[in-house]
Image (cartoon, rainbow, N blue to C red; front, side):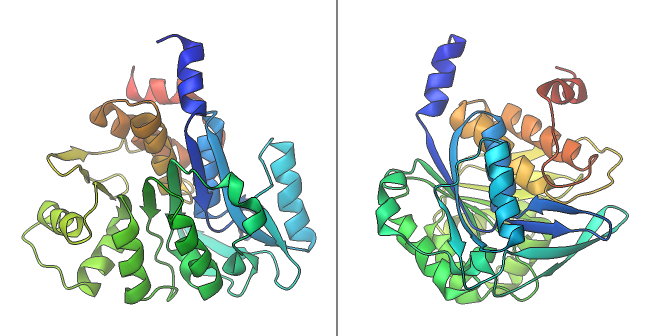
Length: 304
């Protein structure tokens, strides 16, 4: 397929990411982040037709986010400015590259409205990417449920932080999703919460798949063995282990890259997992959740 034809194919897919855009506050720096934003940003770097639905405050941090969007040619028509709540922030500390999070509550992205005047922008969503964190408050949760009605394929990036989740909300999100991406810590929580039992991770992954009637499930485990199940075959993959300095956003970049390879470019499962794992691994070698990663770096890492 010629390059222009591939680009046209990609542009024909309407991708919406829903949830938090915020500021990651490290002890010595501040950087834009939020899992849905991280996925959106990486998908945008692949020249996909992607938009983010979120909310920022009518404050200096919110204006800085809007300036960042304009500087990077990101569309802002689905970013709501909330006059009653501050822009979201997360306090991050790193211990040997592993982050701990303190997520500020009652912020703008907790109150994302469903705006009828912007319905044309979302009335035909090919892929909806969303997490569980933005459902911690009822306003954004109800908005997300309404958007489900316009989505052909739903991708859930589970994001279980602090005590910002309930079994009831998680069950609704899991039932609604076609594709679940989950890490090992979240996997253990779901197993316990829904009382699954099995002899190994593969068996448990299949039980999650069957209970919630999904099409795909992916279990990531950092630099250790991970799994992808499509209803027929279990694929095992192990990312290349690099010298990590900051693991924030690694899973988000993995997911965005997998969506791009597997769903947008129709690449083979094994190749998609390898490329996505490379993007995730390379993210950990740079500071921040949205570093510049060139495909030449991926090719060099994978020796392709």
